[in-house]
Image: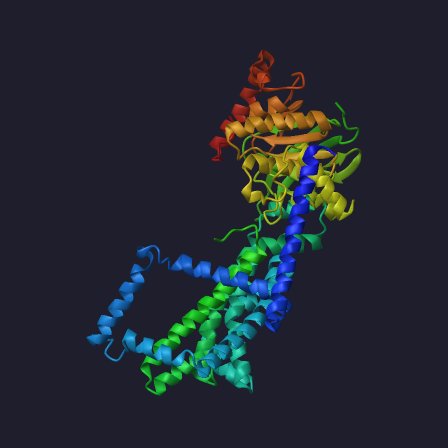
Length: 314
Length: 277
């Protein structure tokens, strides 16, 4: 054994020992606290994923509002200040708009309540369901439309003639179609997300350079390999663009549908506040919707960095 | 210098008519040539003259309207045969076609894994080994976007060679490189050619490049692409940068310059982008 090699072996041994020590210390720690929680956290496999997402969210918010750099938040401060001025001195059309302080007080009172949580959970749940269905149906549809010309000729005209119909105008029909409010809201969310997802997936497939496909064939790939190894990853950036746009429209639809069809949810809460003349809560509702929308698009961006490690978004 | 026994390409009276919009465009007209096994052929011609079309027919991406192309006596392209792109005729594309979603190593192993010629593990081992030989050690796990363009081209050539193709089809592979990287890549390709002895078809619009690299240079006319002139390059191998200043090199270059320039002028007058020198 030459000296270099034995040195390497020593280092490896040391590292291994350290790792062992770390494990022991960790176990001892656990034994001492004797807490069930530690076990649970590691047992729910998603624990590390979650904390990674937290980091991602923090980074994404920080990149938007960088408090260390005053210029980046100056415009925000100015807007709030103007809002304060306009509402305090009742400059039309702000005569009946609540001041920032009123909204803040209402937020402190409302946000920690069960009612607020329930609204968020209801809206989020509808978004999640509708959006998932839109992805499950929309992405394969878009991929096949881009992949197979016959299939495109078969489906695209129908798709394109339905697409210009504003999704909002589907509300009355969907209320008739589904006996349960819940179903019609989820359907509307699905519809909102569906169009941009399909369209962007299709464009993504069509924008893949022919070189990649020819190259893969030239290297001996079979057509089905080309579909999964070239078409799918090649279209992924566009798929995620479609998902981001679709998520925006999903929120538009969930709020609109809840305002009309009712039954909990952030849109319903906001509309209810108008009827109950609880004006600060209208603005609060808008803010919560905005925050939830931001959170869901961050989830998508996070997923996109996981799915496409070859593209660095940050 | 190990010369390959196979990789003999024969094209007989190959023509191709493009008919995308109901307007018949003759892209390649009556091209006949032979590339002997283990020879290096360069095709020079102005932009849009049908060089790439010719290469696509050999690669199996396009079907000729007339004539036939055979490799080692087997017809691979004729109006009646099906398109058969395959790992025996691997293409290196002008804009580069390394899959951006795969690491360098995964790109290099792609061919053997897809063809199922060897188990995944073995293919990866072989890929590592070949990258090492090619002097690309250390970038195996990088994505193509994160390595320099010169390295990308090298990886792509390596990715093609891993499949042990009968013939390597290079479609203006160094087009996007700067002059310095280009000259390094020329040397790299020459060394590779001397070592592997593969048959190479090299397409370019650069006459100097063609003469420097090839055994034979075909000058193509502007569209429809016909063979205008054939130059036998008898410069001794191995070649290096000094070859470019020898009298013989300049003599050969002068021989072909007139023909190439004439075609470039024609192409230019036809409103084509001017590419050839």
